[in-house]
Image 1 (cartoon, rainbow, N blue to C red):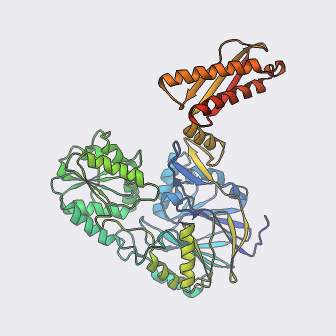
Image 2 (image 1 turned 60 degrees about the horizontal axis):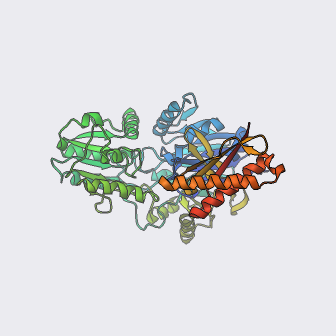
Image 3 (image 1 turned 30 degrees about the vertical axis):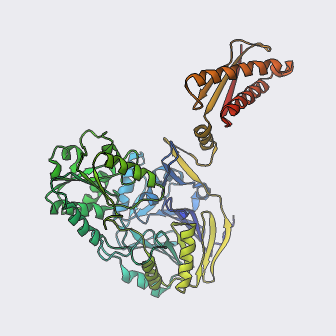
Length: 549
């Protein structure tokens, strides 16, 4: 692929046509700049995490100038410990994000990876790109809009953002810096599309804080647990304020909460609060003396709240009359897991309070009024919607045109797009895909392993072992092992049926075929699959092993 060094290119490898798994690339004068390297979560059995396939940029890694991180959410930094060893480029992030990345890299045995800590509201030169970090608000400390300056024009890459007039943690949005960018001239705005269908404004953490204080105060003497996203440091602080107002101690339950607490204290975001209790100590206090802040608001199998709800935690117990508050939104795809968790709680007599009933959560993404405000400040020539599924991206493109933005484009992962004063143009497409974290290894999500795993899950597995004596007879009777097909007496009957059919099939083979292991194996496979298909109507995944003695 030949790229014009004087043209400015945009290439998403993740996060366009989906929410999560963000990976965006910019190219200018022979160099690539990567923005974010995130994961998404998956419900496939055995697979919890997916990430973008970086094969394309690995092939051009000698020209990868650096990786810039907008903020510290998992869908923007979560793939770093898994994929950075393939890239080995310098990384650039503000202090909070850098601290969390160091944690991840240290756990992965990559403690020497180069992370350049960029002071808040400053900038850095990375090859032919000058990147300015501009303060914005979101649901985690230190989110940044990036102003990516090149001789071919300035791109404003928003990352995840909203306009919160009272963010509770960190400073408000630097509106003047954004207006200044607009006055200087912006070629393209690459912008978050998550809430493009939602009218009005996303709301403020300041309102949520007071509502949580009021709500917790309604349950004196009862054990109260609040489930929220661990990364929402401002929400954890709001929980702490609710505890203080009710005369309670704060107990953190969940590993990721303790990690966030450690980093937040190191950077003085929690300096006004006494150290929080771990859940071991919180479990010894009177039920009305603590406020538990828990991970697991999405019903995650290994998170704290589900463990407590099932009675599997050694220190924390929820009893009839206790209260669990879900101060979070439902991430699409998690609805069933969340409902299952809430049903367990209700069956145990626990009162469940959700954001559908009380005003106890605000989104971290911009609603339509905030998008319109950003357009008015930046005044871009082009809007490139990202961080959304296809219908989000299409809606923001239409919304931008309605607000008199001259040009829009609707990107998909793998689209190589030129950005110029004439507009945005799709010029090529590169291969993209997803990698699945399978235990300790990465495998293609659409590859043979996952294909076979889906087959195993849907059809079961038959393993046939044939031990032949010479070329004409069986040394012993065929062995047939059926896994996930049937059980009990039916299993014995079906196994015997398969064995008999294989013996008959072998006898009917021509003499020359009996001497050919591949033909014997194919006979065993076809015979077994036919028997099983007649039994339950599915083509069972079948493997045949042939040995001669």
